[in-house]
Amino acid sequence: MSDHVAKNKAYWNRIAAEYQQQHADQLGIVEPTWGVWGIPERELGLLGDVAGKDVLEFGCGAAQWSVALARRGARMTGLDLSDEQLRHARALVEREGVSVTLVQGSAEAVPLPDASFDLVFCDHGAMTFADPHKTVPEAARLLRPGGMFIFNMATPLLYLAIDKATDLVGPALVNDYFGMKAWEEDDGSTSFQLPYGEWIRLFRRAGFVVEDLVEIRPPADAKTTYEGYVPLEWARKYPAEHVWKVRREPGR
Image (tube, rainbow, N blue to C red; front, side, top):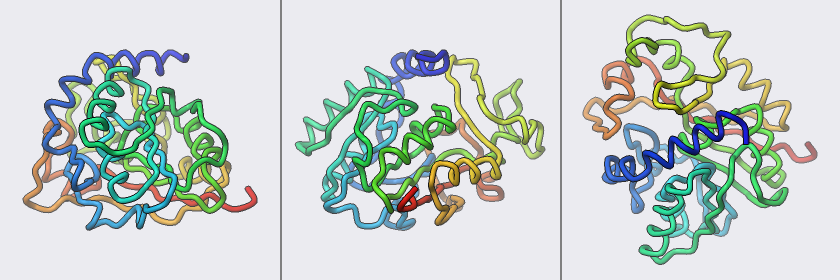
């Protein structure tokens, strides 16, 4: 297990209970929503009809998304690194009485067979806390030809505007765009980001075609339980989160 994987596992094991309690109201199992502002999937329409599809949630946490999509007819698998997050997930799945297969492992080396899924997705999750140079090829391996990889995460712009001394987002670009990769936090976690061109080249090398990039703009009255993430007024002016939507090319 690499250093950042071990650190992130320890971090999520440590904060899982507090995280689930703090964000319970926003992590919906009836109405799946995207990102820190809770934008409903029914408004964005990113995943489409999941009924009858084999779907992998890439860093499922307590599996709220997996439960919601299982209710919509998906054959769900939830992957997570954290023992504690999976403990919450098992309890939720049992309580809700749905079928979700839960697997422990890193998204950088997933313990599942090739071509197992029609859709791999996450809302932050693995694509925030794992190395994209490993997760993107893993997603390609796990998908069937023509399968979709859809994930929401912070934008490079957000990373450029974070003051490392205060961990607050400001109005100026203060960090090196071309030097973005691993971002080590004071809390022990490590997150990842890349410049846009590097993302696109990485997708192409893995056999993906970019279908869309949806930049999330919260409504003026948006509320969030993630109050330290970014000020609403900032996220109304500049995209703080975006969703990549890429398709696995047949024959690649």
